[in-house]
Length: 247
Image 1 (cartoon, rainbow, N blue to C red):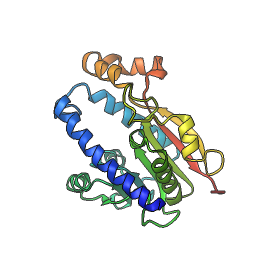
Image 2 (image 1 turned 90 degrees about the vertical axis):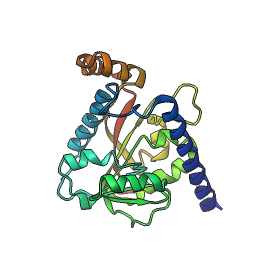
Image 3 (image 1 turned 180 degrees about the horizontal axis):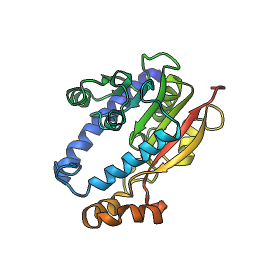
Image 4 (image 1 turned 30 degrees about the horizontal axis):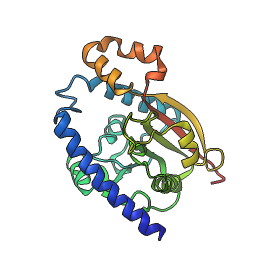
């Protein structure tokens, strides 16, 4: 019954996510998140990449041998930073429940291993990857049972002593109950911090969208100064977890 409920929840989430994206881009415009056409996006993306690079430096990731699995990879955008840093494409994997987005990911990054799969029940063996990561996935998982199942799967496929990278929003979206912030407290519950995992470090990423998008477009030279002076304005954070040997 639990597996059926999980699958049903994922299918419902897939439909809701597809509907959300259609409504979002019809309302905001197709250039809403275009690096090429929308100046609001540039420094938000730079801040995210900076946080990811710092996180990877903190664990001394070896680009030649590190195996990475991206949960909820979408169209594969999170893989670009790994490719730019020289990670071996054959060691990069991504899974997503939406087949359409996986097809797009494969067309854009044919050298990376993408597959359409249920992130709460994967076919990978235990202790397969050096890094399991996600990017803005848990904020969209308001269903605690489903979120817990995916978190457990992230821990399962990560090698003992390996790393989990959580790149997500730590504040909720006002007026949107379907979004649930990935706060430190929520991370502790989902990933059983203190037993199965330990929090190693956190790195501040993009500023909260209204502020970050405004600065990126109108005062880009001040973006990282504001970022440094007011760290609480960083809405997205990269949290580095280590999988314990007792898990």
